[in-house]
Length: 111
Length: 117
Image 1 (cartoon, each protein chain N blue to C red):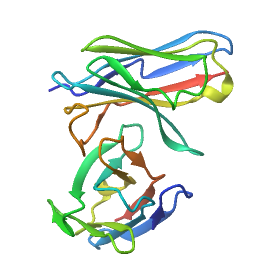
Image 2: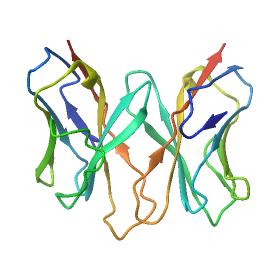
Image 3: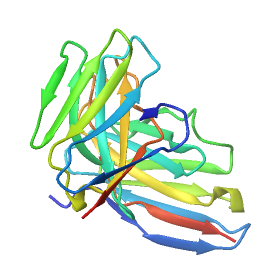
């Protein structure tokens, strides 16, 4: 898993498995959360976002879960594919402040 | 939509030289952000503009760094003089909303890999 401000951990999975990437955010007042995917040599790409009035949001093969009680955010990727290999960042903000990014989790998918 | 466009993709320069990084945000976006990414510090916000006006430059490391946004379609980040510790990937990002909008997702460019020797 990942915690905003800590070193970059790595998650290794097999193709077809479900992946869960975790993020512990720091500001209990944060009201918007977002996940980005960054492939090697590219800029971060938006995956999915969620506001604090929701606990869960689903996209295509991805689900974000928010637990405000313990300040925890997770990204679930179903049927992980080699193309999902990348660094995943969570980010948070509150009100009109700018996004604060965590340092990321590297996901390695082996065939 | 071409997305956020940054140039150059790679820049290698010698210590003491001036470096200028360029960014074209997505058309219609009102906010523009400059980030620096390193393994040690992750993604750091340097400065952001709203409607071409600098709003928060508290992340700019020191006076050697400056940023401008002369119009809605162009921004520059300049480092003068450059130092080896400035070596990093510099990203530009833009978003649709203004200061009255919360929770806006950012769209990033491909970055400029800067190496200062």
